[in-house]
Length: 451
Ligand code: ADP
Ligand code: ADP
Ligand code: MG
Image (tube, rainbow, N blue to C red; front, side, top):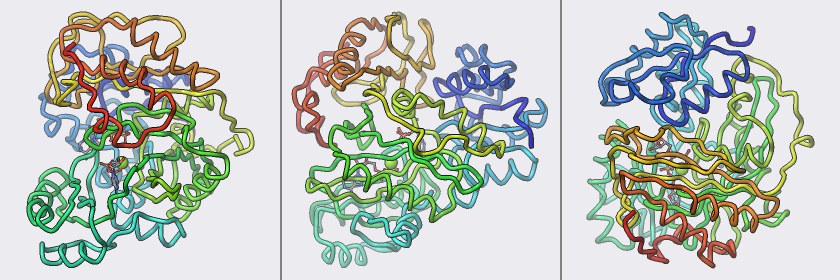
């Protein structure tokens, strides 16, 4: 198989622009697909060709497998990049691509299927000798069964949808009464969001830190890690700020973590890029949480410290090229931080759609991965992320200082955003000391003026 001539991007917004950038660099043509709500979006005009695939609702456009396949065939695309979210972790979509002889830029349908189930993933990781969060390895069918297991494990516990994602479908429960209260609702939410009502229980890890490992694997059995990302600044179990390296890890602990991640992906013969997510407790024990079988929102921090282009690696691996770098050749330099700018109320974290009437971004020494420009709208139909701000410094201190300066220079108007919150975090002593857990935002109760 040769390298691709034309890649269809089955996604929108900042990640579509990100993929177009690498395709341009590689001399690959691009096909953008867009919904009626995105007709004016920058990625649509930046692609070589663009095709409207339906109305605003994702179900009728970005999630319509047959529509996307049809456009790929009509435009003679030889590969599809799914981005993140939408169809990126959908085994049925991967199978349809295979049937039509279109290369899916990602892992196999089988691995996506296995790792898409948090329960099956737990089983596989234990086989590989990777410690998982203490919990059950089977689906819980009834409240009575849940209560028995819960009392065996001991509270606090996390009730989780096996097929969950994006922080949706999980509930922290402190006692029997709370478990009884949320069990049916969580199961129902899992069914409606993920078409799979399977739920299970996991110990809630106290003072948790979320640290994940970026993996790259070709189709010849070469598996590499690109170090870790610290993603503990979260709201609603979803990341807001990510950095690499993690201020929490020493070299011994880092090596243990990276080794575990590599063991885990070798177990499932993983290919392409992927992320092994772990949770650390206060005693530096770490447990496997889940795997994301796709490019991650926060991949830029890894690119900044390694100098590698993850989308380029994805394209080459999918084109059956061998990895030409070795683990020893991958070095990390300095420190990178990413802030996610959301159109949301900074106190309630509810989305705040609308037109971005003003957007002025500073130009020096900063990377912006944004899906929109001044005058664009954030619609209620999709994720309210406006864009990502990424800085790199020689030290963590320098990266924080840069981020403080950049955030101060951003001028955005028209919708409520979390910009003030990001600024406050960058000036928070606990954050500056690197001494924070996933409870950081909840504990600090940072009150933000609207803006
Ligand atoms: P990451 O794990 O890469 O940090 P997120 O958890 O923030 O990513 O999710 C990536 C994107 O995919 C976000 O836009 C999020 O809203 C969306 N997403 C993730 N999982 C789902 C899902 N199961 N259903 C709908 N959207 C999802
Ligand atoms: P998703 O598929 O939605 O990304 P994850 O299992 O990766 O779900 O969990 C998302 C976040 O929820 C984690 O980063 C962490 O902050 C929190 N979380 C999940 N499981 C636990 C747990 N057992 N203990 C403490 N926090 C947890
Ligand atoms: Mg996760």
